[in-house]
Length: 122
Image 1: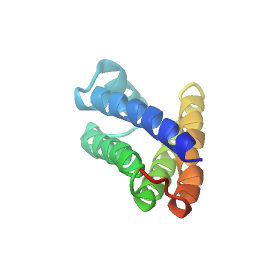
Image 2: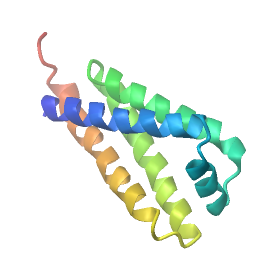
Image 3: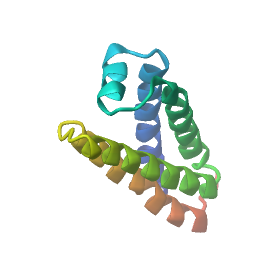
């Protein structure tokens, strides 16, 4: 389970940092999507912070399981909010990627719970 957590945490963190980077530089795709969802651009800084914090929490969770669990729970809520935002405006093209990311975000939580009980020796 620990190896699974490490792999999922690193892959998810990579996706989160890339997404946060696109939000930070305010790409046309991101700003257009925010507008179509009815979200103000002023929310971008919060979204960047949430993604970077989640990524950092997952990585630190490799060594300290409770933080990994907290990060996974926070990211699950973050992406569930993204799903709700897309469905609220009838954006059925944008909802599936958010649904997939929500399901992936649940993974580190499930594996980190086991990781906190059995910490490997280094």
